[in-house]
Length: 489
Image (tube, rainbow, N blue to C red; front, side):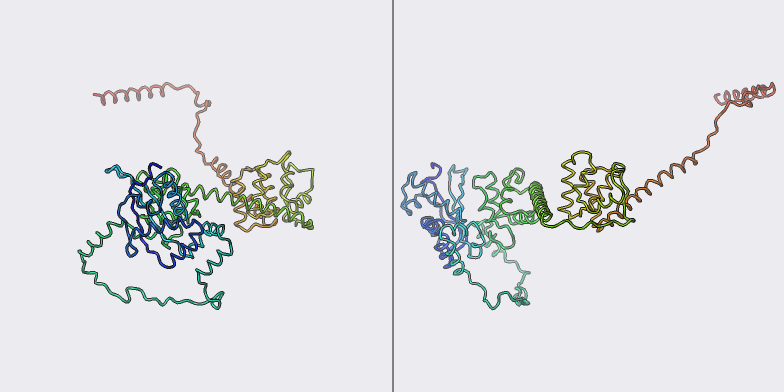
């Protein structure tokens, strides 16, 4: 409380004026929620700037506020004033900022006022509507809404019509002389804008789905990144980036505020780091998607169990001979080919899995096939053919491999037992043809190897050398030796 006393100075900023509608909103909507004392404090702050002007008030001591509100300059009075300003801040009418002037070593307070929400925006905010309902009741809220918002004529409701925009744009009526630049006017306008830094940006711009007011009202007051978030009001390009990320990853305002309070979202200067924010948003999107998939899975599982209890067993469907599959070695002797194909065609995949595993079926295998059946809407008969295909060819039972096969089957409209049998036969034939050329090339290449002459100890090679051949060999050796000596010299 010693950092907020009557001796500290303050100033007020507002960029709006109150209309008769605003006064009615303050009296009928906001006053029942936060009380008459808070509205009186709001009006006192509002009147520090003349009604026909906008901008900043003069620096004054807070003693003026205490005397105007008949408050004691003590801890009790300071506590009462903070309670009223907190109520105003909670409903979005006020924003209080504590500033430390380094050069003067002084602490001052800024009270930034905001206009009341119009009736349409007010009743779109569920937290404000619910608070008003708790204060005055549901029927009073409905009566206020009908009183403040004029509905469309009953004769125009629920009727389709073709609209044509007849409004004339600015450039069709007026023509400006853009060749001449009035430097004095530009300088004067820039000097006027010095006292109001970047206030031209509307905080309630309808261009964005996520407004600055929606973010600042939900962001914690004492959070580390609160100063950076407050600067978003004057940075429309960063607000546009936030809206892009929110729309891309389907993130609400509450989750966006939670992301803005994470580490790695702002740099030391308060600039938004889009890469870090997108990574955090992608994690939230992945978690939401995973929760939705689990919800759909459990709801479909419950629906399937309820349907199985209510419906009787259907008649068994016979399998044509051209679509019969051979019995795998593990089931040979236990059932005939007809019985085996009838099982694949009519039994659920759970019973088929139990027949192929000697003991208990692993839990992850149940999970894989239940997701394929409930989420991917893959029929039991198709899954049974897939189980046969995996078992006969000794393929892997991991999830990515099985999902890749099922996605290919569903992409090719394999939704019945017959089409599934044709699919696995086609895949088996392709695999066989793929392996056959490689073996053929290997066997063909064996005959293309060069025939290298090998020295063997035959009778001709071991025959003794005659004296004439021996003399000729010595002469050739002497001639070669003589030629080498002449070359060296």
